[in-house]
Length: 238
Image 1: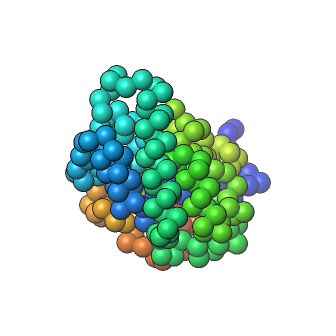
Image 2: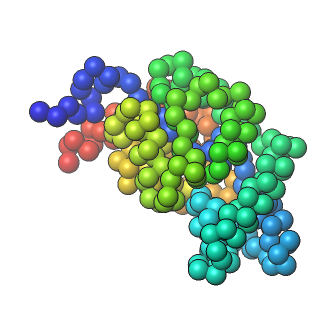
């Protein structure tokens, strides 16, 4: 008989998979400004309504959404993507938008036995810059970036890969996300989902999550452990 999420020698080991943008850093304004800077160089304008609609997708998908699918070559997309992300790193390097409670939650989870992973659609350069600024790189056992996936959220690929690298089944993982497409991806992966109503998000837009909070300071290892257990019990009951 196959073992369930609550059986086996590693039954008490859980995983916490963090999105980066809007979760570990309040990057809304930095990303919006970096897209505006790139668009200004090209003589076009990016509206905030467009930015909000595409936030959380891969940069390639966003470039195609702004400039048209099939209108740019792969090389042109990569070049625009690189320019945009360089703007972003310049912005956050000069004024790092650390999310309140991020450092403490990461340390508390690590010390309580959680395996930590980061699942972001951002490029590796962004991810490692943020982890360096947070002094958090040694806490993570798995890191998945936009270079590791071929499909952006709401496809669950990024989170399933993160769980695989942690060596844990999806049912023992919780995802902390700020974007509706991220919550959908966590659901599709069969994971517990926590929605963070950060800048540019509403609690209503994250209603599909198992729990919605206004700050990482509202989370604790015990809360996340109980949340995973509750979702699994409900899943087995049905």
